[in-house]
Length: 280
Image 1 (cartoon, rainbow, N blue to C red):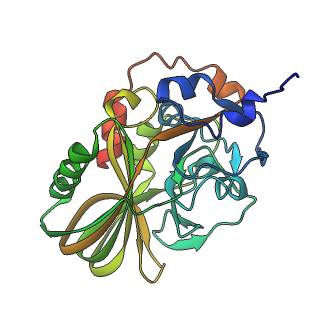
Image 2 (spheres, rainbow, N blue to C red):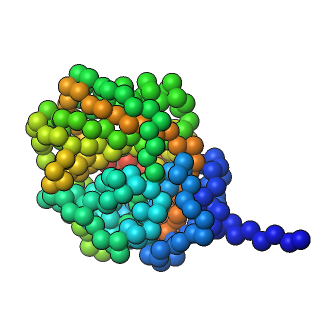
Image 3 (spheres, rainbow, N blue to C red):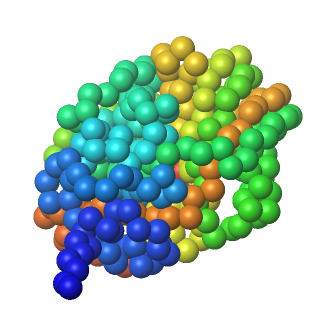
């Protein structure tokens, strides 16, 4: 009896080490729904493109929001043309625009880069006396070390922030500039005090250095869903953390002339650090 296996469909659902999944990634030739015949594996971190492609300037949306929702209910990313910061929470996709305001995003919009998963509460705990974002990372890193450094972690962090600093950026026009250049002139900063809200955070292990930013990356949205953005600073007396350890990884690569022509062997670590820390 013959058995037929569609590797492209399996690539989005099989739990394999990251290096293997990167090789099996499914190209997104157009901004299509890319539906699979089997249910999404809820213990998989799904990634659209490479952060390194985004930092080079590929802001061309390749996966629709509707498709992204089939891959997770919690996550972070950005939108076509770099049009704001993406926060996915409880299955709803929000945009923190250049003005810091929030809007719900339609299913037919597209993303050039995102990370999403179905959030499961593998661990729930409280953190207190967080004086800055460094203290938050240190506390979360202790949890990561105890649970396993070489896995992916998505966190939902709820509470009142005595101070939180966020940023977003203006939508870009072609020809696209590298992300570090964009953020020299086209990013906007906002500070909020004594505000309730939620931080969505992603941890990538060290071996992901050629596919994403290693360590933690945070996006924020207020409880009233009126403001948010990429987090570069925070302070809080008490926060509740829901942590999801994820053992699977899946990637969808874009298929456009710009991405296909990049030399991704170039070291972009300095630019990625600049982008992540929110330096002006």
